[in-house]
Length: 346
Ligand code: AHG
Ligand code: MN
Ligand code: MN
Ligand code: MN
Image (cartoon, helix red, strand yellow):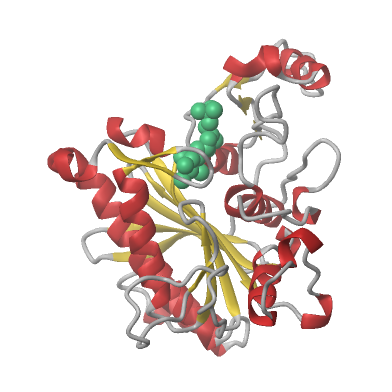
């Protein structure tokens, strides 16, 4: 009967979430959070799409360096505010951690008269809501000035049982109980995610998500302003013929990694067929293609980036959750990415 109701529009993301809430698969707080993510994704899609028409306002550098040590683009900052504010108004989140924020911030300062989010290390910090959202508002932003696909990545944790909260001693020093609870909630391993997803701003805007029960894909129908389900169950093909990595760094990789890539491109892998290279440098785009066509995406460690360049909290963990839920694998070479607890938010 769900299908009947939606026969005119298709199954929209909001209807899908309501249905999951009605069936007790997600609670109403998580439903509100996804309402906000959906609205933020539409705004970011519009910003990215119209950026070349408003170059002075939307393209180029902001002039600041973020805590990850990267030059921020104007759109990195604007999209961070869009995503942060959308989540803030749900009133259902305790803490937000973003690639573009110096440190995790309080998400529930609505109605407090504050205009800025309160950082976790400040004395006024007080944690409330039970969900924690980690996100990369504009992934692949080095591509954005040229109109090449970019994305948004997000993950949602539930506040952990205080008994299970373990914060490295160097991080917990001098912090109140509230602050420690919030940090421990933010620095959970990917296997504790209750939801994750990404939005790809490309020829179409695609929103792919998981609540830990498989992977579902939606496409933004701009004529009605709704995300409509287009891929009810995404499963990664068991074998692909594309590999995706910045091979510009190949000389700096570990020898076994270099050898592996050399082998698959020479057709010495299990399939016996040579792999082709596709690499955008926008993780969301490269992962989306890998998810749909099969193959391998990697950002191997190199001599500059000893743990690889991707950030575990904002990129590695949410994407690994999606990959595993689609039947794929996400590994470091030594372990499952989802098992690794982040050591910090940077
Ligand atoms: P971001 O734009 O959010 O900082 O992330 C960029 C990431 C990721 O999207 C991509 O896979 C990788 O950096 C590209 O790095 P290289 O330019 O070193 O290949
Ligand atoms: Mn960045
Ligand atoms: Mn990114
Ligand atoms: Mn980013």
